[in-house]
Length: 118
Image (cartoon, one colour):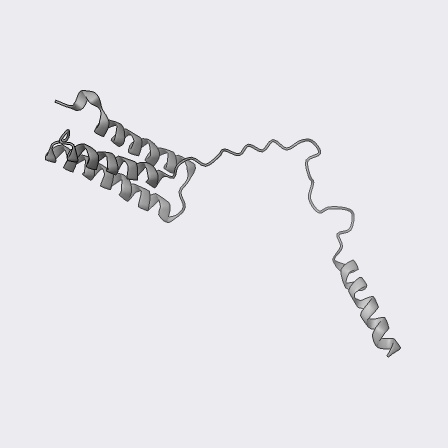
């Protein structure tokens, strides 16, 4: 009984001592302050694309877009959506997200541009 109790008390201490790092931490940590900049997430790229598609639908329903113009803008929205799907397949990088966001906003601006109307 005494041998079992001694074994249960000593084994965890010995096992823990074997895994402790010798000579301090195995990595060098910076001694000064760490500059960490976090940007808040903006709208996802597909949200801008959804807004552009909604603008095309609204403008066509209001009669401010011809059928051919609406078809061309929907085709551009489809191209942007396909690019988004391809880029998102392996993870969307910041530059890819920015490009798709800009193309979606440009499409929405073209759709709602006052000078475009006849």
